Each structure stands twice: as C-alpha cells, then as structure tokens.
Amino acid sequence: MNPRLVVLTGAGISAESGLRTFRGNDGMWEHENIDDVCTPEGYYRDRKRVKDFYNFLRRGLKEHEPNAAHFALAELEKRLGNDFLLITQNVDDLHERAGSRKVLHMHGDLNRLTCERNPDHKFVFTEDETMDTVCPFCESMSRPDIVFFGEPPLYMDRIQDALRQCEEFVYIGTSSVVYPAAGFKSFAKSYGAKVTCLNLEVPENDPYTDICIQGKATEIVPRWCKAFK
Ligand code: APR
Image (cartoon, rainbow, N blue to C red; front, side, top):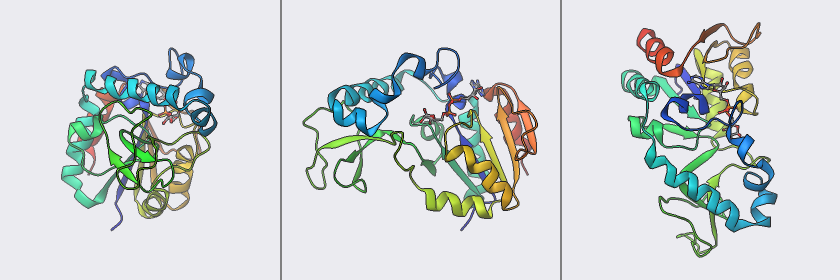
C-alpha cells in the first residue's frame, strides 16, 4: 500500500539534539575527510580506521535524545498509519527512540552492521565493531552498515514507488545536495505531489518546492505536523 504523505529527513532534524550536521559551519565534513571515512576506497585502504570512526559515532548516540521534531513525526505516523512513510538520510537512531516504527534509513544505520561479501546480510549491532567481528550468517568480515559515497542507497525501489504515488512530499533539515535524495522533490513533483520544505535555510525560487517554511526543526515541524490533515 502506498502512503499519502512521504517525509524525508536530513541531519538538520537532529541538530537540536546536539548531533553535528555534515555541511555548513562546524559540520562533520570540516572535521573528517570524506575520502578516508566515507568511501569504499577509504574503507578497503584502512578498515580499522573506518570501523573505529563509526564505533565512535555509535557510542555517541547514547549522549543524545530525540527532540520535539522527531516526536512530532512519530505522532503523525501513529495518526496516519499506512498513509505515512518516513525516509531518513540520517544514520542515528533518534527517530526510532522517539517512537517512529517504519523508518527507511536510506544511507544506512549506525546500529546495524552488514556483511562485506553479502550486503543482504544485515544485523543489529550496538557495541564496538573490531577486526574480528563477523557476519552471523556466513562468518565473513562485517562492516558498518553505512552507505559510502559511490554506493547505491538502500530501499530505492520502495522509495520510488512511494514518491510516484504520494499526494505530498515533505523534506526536512536537509541541504538537498546529495543525490539521489536531492532529486526526490523533482521526482515527486513530476508525478503530481505537492512539495513542502521545512528547514533553517529555504531555497529561493525552487521550481519543485510549493511551500517553504523557514525555522528551527523543533519549532516548525511540530506545528506543521499538527496542522496536517
Ligand atoms: N532545524 C532545521 N534545519 C536545520 C537545523 C535546524 N535546527 N540546523 C541545520 N539545519 C539545516 C541546514 O540549514 C542544512 O540545510 O539542515 C541541513 C543539513 O544539511 P547537511 O549537513 O548537508 O545534511 P544532509 O542534507 O542530511 O546531508 C545529506 O550527506 O554526507 C552525507 O550521508 C550524509 O546523509 C548525509 C547526506
């Protein structure tokens, strides 16, 4: 069954929970080298460095709590049921901890590992991954379940179906520069959806966005969710 409303979130929704966004002032990519920690080449060059980087981020999750924007989306899911689909580019677990049940982590999930040989082998993992951690299904070496630059995002068939059929597409807290997520608004629009942007910075004269609401996620998302009919 296809949802009436599709929501895409990015790092901006978790910013007020204290998690760094990727771009902009003091963003993650100012402190870390993408080529080292977020590409297949970087991973195969130095697996331990990459596993340790995601171990550090995974450990850090415990220090952050979901905020009012995450809770508002969880409430909306309860209200709309199958008419609602949440897609996130985030690898944190704040949507789940706010109560969201169906979350498509299109860029992966820090609390999951996958298998180096068979990417369909995925498993929940909340400890530190070491060079000895193996896939429980086939005993090959594990790796973080993170979609590196150059790798295909997850759940794309399901996402495209939903974007084709939905009545409204809303993107929240994302800079809309990383594809394919950045192209969801034009794709949904071309199939007739109304497109709304909720963000600290909103695009000017964007031909694919019908409504822009500018502000902090914790303020504008709860208000928007409450008003959604
Ligand atoms: N409320 C709303 N929006 C905010 C807030 C806030 N409190 N704080 C920041 N933002 C907005 C910024 O204005 C920016 O547009 O969130 C956006 C964050 O953009 P990015 O850091 O680029 O994050 P995102 O779009 O999620 O990045 C996409 O890039 O590196 C990859 O895989 C990584 O999933 C990530 C992808």
